[in-house]
Amino acid sequence: MRRMALLSSAVGAFTLIVTVTGCSTIRGEKSGSGEELAASGPTVVDVQVQPETVELNQQNQLNAPAAVVAQVQDIRSDVTNVTIRFLNAPVELPMEHVSGTSWRAEIPTETVQRLAINNQTTTYQANIYARNADGEVGVSREPIDIAIKAPNVTGAG
Image (cartoon, rainbow, N blue to C red; front, side, top):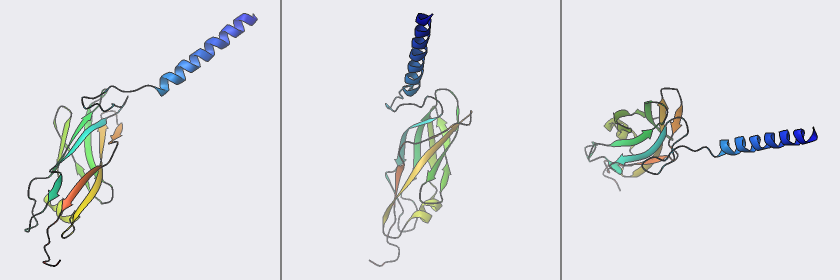
């Protein structure tokens, strides 16, 4: 009888250890970029700002189209919505699904003009938020930097 109780306790302890260890080490698969995917929910695996520095010309227009491209993967559900949210400015931009895991957002000229500071390069930070069909939300691990360079339009300095 005592032997049975010890065996039962040992099996219970072993099950507890395996369960706790298993839960703490569950990891998602690796993406093509080497980023670890979330076990559930969307994962933002790569983000690029094009061009690296968004520039306005003397006429306060973009020198080149400005965009953010993100790779978003979800191993269990379809990604349905991706947005860019600036951290210290009231700006949120929807991203459009391009193909596969690629999402893209144009940064409108009006948004760049609003964020630009005369004769300075200002770097803003933003996060990418992704939602899947199950309602789960993933956020980029690190904020991205979006640099905006404005010309000197006042003629001073």
